[in-house]
Image (cartoon, rainbow, N blue to C red):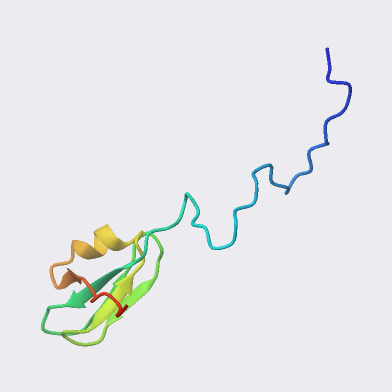
Length: 90
């Protein structure tokens, strides 16, 4: 037996999930990028295999933030080292 046609018709493109309050974090929040330092003797450019982004390290010691989706591939490059940035002043 039916519910008596008291249902709201479904409209494509509308969400059935409740809206999140402003400032709340999504359960699917993307992790922040990782920063890598060029420890090699020259500059280099790396293309992220997932995003296709170009990460240019112009000279030894230069640092670049890498998309988290490319992180594991960039970490496998011997001339690059993951570095931690200092925490911001409170």
